[in-house]
Image (cartoon, rainbow, N blue to C red; front, side, top):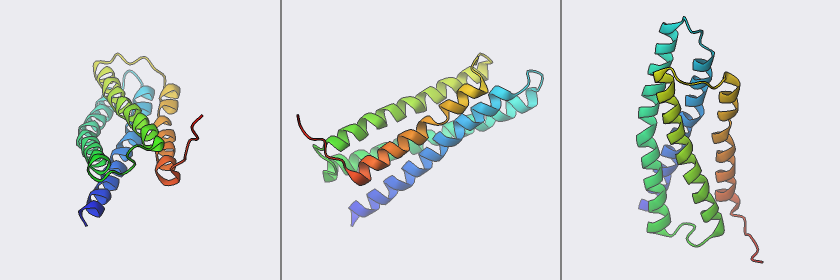
Length: 146
């Protein structure tokens, strides 16, 4: 029974973390479009982004911790190529999360030079990664050994 609760909580925390990964870069798009003289709007968006990022961090750790518990404690995907591919994508997602924190610090310092168009493309990365991770988990493709 505990396996199902761990799996349920893992899915809830992954979903919550991804909500932040989807929305934080949208705030970056808006920040990149703020006129230089509009300090109140800029400060409001930075405050929103900062609070969201602080909220996302424990969600990420809970999702990762429960995922590792499923993998190492219950053997889910142990030794499977799809799990190795999923873990590689998870590492990239954690790096993306950390990069979002770096970008937020740049906006806070007023040193971000990227355009809103760049952030619109950057915003698509977690969507693509989510599709790939879900496909790996659901389909569990078997890669033939050469």
